[in-house]
Structures are given as C-alpha cells and as structure tokens.
Length: 600
Image (cartoon, rainbow, N blue to C red):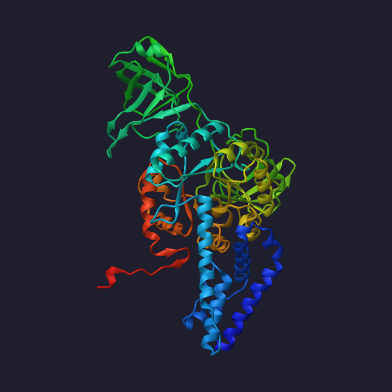
C-alpha cells in the first residue's frame, strides 16, 4: 500500500483530471438545458474518472477504511473531494474541512435524479421507488378491462408499441389509460415507442395449406382422447403441422353439408399423405359438427370428405410458415430483393427489409440473425447482395423464418433513427403521449434530428426516452446523452435483448450496469427492459433466474414488462418484489438493514 503523501498526490491528480475534462467540455455542458447542467458536468466528471485505471488507488483507499469511489456516480467530484479531505486529515493537514458542503453536493445528485425521474415518468407509489411499465396488447384497444386490470395491479406507465396497430387503436388505448388513471385516483403515464427502421428478414414462400389432427395416447400407445376436427368452423390460425395432441382443429366446409350429418355417422377421406382415414360424427349443432378419430390425419385445402354418398371439400386453410434451414458452413446471399424465397432452392437466398444495409456491409462484418442464434460473416459484397458465410448455429442448425431480426454490429448504417413512417405518426403521437421512445439510436445526430422533428410536431411538452439497443449507441453513449440533455425531459431504456445480440452474451452482466451508472452520473432516469419476468407473464410460473434479474432492475427508475396471458399477476408480483428490494438497495449502493435472523 502507498503511504499517505502518495495517496494524497494520486487523489490530487485525479481532481485535476476532472477539472481539465470539464474545461475541455465547457461548451457542450453549456449547450444543455439549464435543468440538466449539473448532470452534464457530473457526466463529464464521471467519464473522466472511468477513463482512468484507478483500481490500485481504490484498493489502497479501502485498506485504510476510506471510500473506494465505486459508488461515486451521484456527484463524482464531491465524492473524490471527500476522500481528499479524509486523506488530508489523516496526514495532519490543518484543514478546514467543509464536509457538510460535500455531503450536500452528493445528496443533490440523488435529488436531481429523483426529480428528473418524476418529471419524465411520473410519481411512484410507496414503498416502491421504481415504476412499472407494461406493454399493452392489441386487445387493449377492444377491451378497456385489460387496461383497468393492469392499473389496479400497479402499472405506472402503459407502453404503446407504434410498430403495431394503427393511430385509431393507439388513441383508444391512450384514452382507456387516462380514464383508468382517473378512476384509480393516481397518475398513469402513456409511453409510445416509435417503430424505427425495421431490420428484418424478408418473406419466405408459404408452405402447403394443411393442418394435422392427432389423438392423445398413453405410455403404451393406447388412445385416451381422440383426434378432433370441428367442421364448418373458421379455419385454424395455428398454421402448425403438429398442434397439441387432442386439440380441436377447425376446418371450413359447406355448412349445408354439415347440417345433413347425424351423430354416429362415418366420415371417410384420403388425407394429404394418401392415408385412408375414418372419423365419426360425435356432435352436431347449429354452428358446425365435431368429428373424432383414433388415427393422426393431415387435412388440406380441397380434400374430399365423404359421408355415404354425400361429399364436400375442405375450404381454404392457412398456409404453413416455411423457414430456411441454416447450418454452420452454409453460404447465403443477403439481398434487398424481397421476392419470397424458396427454402428448398439453391443457392440459399435471404431478403433484407432495409435495402441500405446490404450495400453498407463490408467483408469481415458480422451479421447476426434471429436474436443472434445464427452468426455469419460477410465474404463478398456484389451489386445483387452480400454473400454471407454462416459461422455459428445451434448444433443441428437453425430454421430461420420471415420477419426475424438482423443485427449488424460492425456496420455503420446510413439510415436515420426516425423513419418516414415515424415522422408521419409524430403529430398523433405527441397528442397522445407523455413520453416518446426513440428506437435504433446510434449517434448524437440521431438525437438532434429527433429533437428537431418533435419540436416541429409541437411535442415540446413530451419526454424523450432513448432506446440503447446497438453497440454503436453504447460506445457513443456519453455524447448521445449530452446531445439529448438539450431537451427538458430525457431518459434511457436499456433494451437488453438487441443489446445482448450486438455486444455478445458474455458482456451482458457488465454493459447494462455500465449504462445504469453513466445515466446516474447524468442524473437521468433509466428503464430496465427485455424479458423481465417473461416466464411468469407467458406461462404463469417464474424462474429463479428471472426473479433475481427483476430484483437487479431495481437499480433503474422503471422496469418494463411485456404482454402475456398472466401479465396482471406479473405486475402484482413485481410490485411486491420492488417494495422489498428498495429497503436494501439504492442504485449501486448496498444498504445493510438489520438481519433479524442473525441478531438473536
């Protein structure tokens, strides 16, 4: 460990580095909104601190019982100055030591963050200090009870995804949120996410129009529940070649033919595979008839059903979704041509919904498909597309369908975060929303353009949330935040799904934490997003890992949940979890409450 004079010199040098960086960035700090000026200065101080390797200094400070500066985000210079004063006192310097002013400066950072979170995201009901945002499903535009139940469960902000539905549906949803909030007697915000540029795989030729019905069998292969076909109902929307055993599949046929059927009557047909099958009518009603059989059958559009001498044909069934099978070592042409591709054709071809991407690629650039489950590298760029070599897939390959995500972390894309469709929707969005989410932010220029277009649409009163979902955005985050802080109300969403795809799963424990810390230094609120309590929302049972993950999200000012059949229960669970976690956590600082079990 260094002696006291050496430690004093090291901390003095650190203070000088902070002041030098602030002087260099004086113009950028002055350019932000007055309400963010303290945050901008502290952000510059924090990036200066993180630009130094202070690990040795931290260990030496901890060895003599002083702060390691590991939680200096709220007010960096004040925290370093507090350490300097303590070292001076230990070294016998005469002082005076104005510890009260330093303590007030640190508290002011926390207070500013809380104020900015309240201004942007609204108040939060105690004992929680972290808000809950929920993505509204499309059904919320048709049934106000969906919104009412979420508000009653504890939702603080409703997220409307503008990549789906239309302006009329958005308006209805926002209206339901306002009325539910008024009934509940508390504010509930409306957050609207602009779609941004859609970087997705192109269409794939549809498969045959066929559905499968199959019985349920026990461990010995005996039928315990027959295969079930509902005749004259609406066509099945499952589109899967194999629905659940025993599941009733609706098949459209002539309703008049159905009404001539009798219970117990036999139906015969040759299925799509050429197999003879015999089903029996089990039920006849005004809406249709139920036929059951003990063998698996594939029914397709145009198939003939025979009851004695009375025949009918199966009507239009939905086409099955087809996908390309990609394996390590495959070569595939990524092209702007969105003609549906044939999965059986060779060479393999894959459309890209954003034409600018294809020509922006360069040899050696990575291309990640379907949330990174498939990784490829660009071998060659030609006028008709870019040839990719698949370098990683799951062991048996991966089937890739249409509308799957494409990430290009090494490529500088010549596209704006605001699309023409986003700009067209802005007038409606600013009239409905409290907060607007900006997708696909990658640079300060994206933010400047968004501020300009929002102001032109009359959106000065709405807040902006920057979705950090690309590696470029993470690298440029300090500059992006300084640009955004020219707007009065600003926050950040950590979109961990796309971010993980871009930066790699091995960095997912550190990068979101670094974003949280940087935003805390800027006194800007954050939203913890992507797959929080996903199993609970979709299946009704949480995993142990996602409970821990949700608790970690308490470092943010808001946690976003996605829609699911069990979303109300999920909101209630998160509400209780956050109320307990806040007693032992404040941002990155662990608070040591009394452990009653150990104090007997």
